[in-house]
Image 1 (tube, one colour):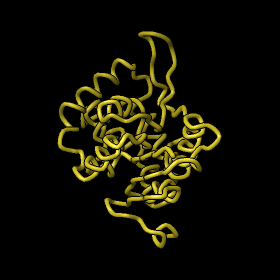
Image 2 (cartoon, helix red, strand yellow):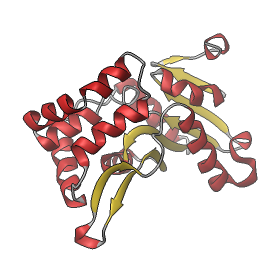
Image 3 (cartoon, one colour):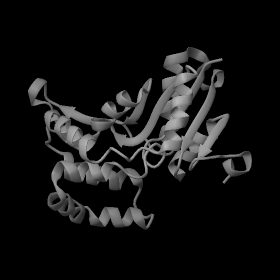
Image 4 (cartoon, helix red, strand yellow):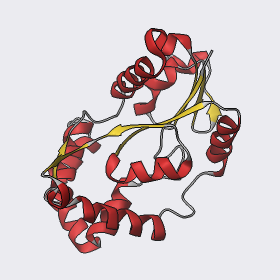
Length: 215
């Protein structure tokens, strides 16, 4: 029976959120703070649980990424990796990832953060697959630019389950997740739907038992 290890990224593999730091590194803090001011009604609404996660995130993405070229994203990613990413990985989570890789398990990163920088991170960390929020791109060649809109639904909550199930169906055929041993790792309520699928689940670095799955 194949073994799959599904890892959330922000807060699970890292010590905290990476998207805001990535955007601030790319834009510079003055322009990033101005973007936050423009998005404040939606971000405040999300904090008060009045605005859905994908709506607030969509506003922030459009305010910071619309019209940016893919070449710019490569530059942003390189600078973020050089200045902000070192030291952000959690040692306990990386130990678990190394154990799965050494055992020959299929390792999948499942994250709500965008592909514009996670593609590089997933490759560097040795993941077999990346399931994340994918950004819409228009144009061709050197003229390719982000619209600021998400091409896929925000990979959060139940979307993580849907994306993981679709990936497993394509990878393993008709058996899908029912025919694999699933390990899952997360740290927020947005990860719990994925954790409930797993035979072995870890929440905030600790085993997540049957009683906790019902919460």
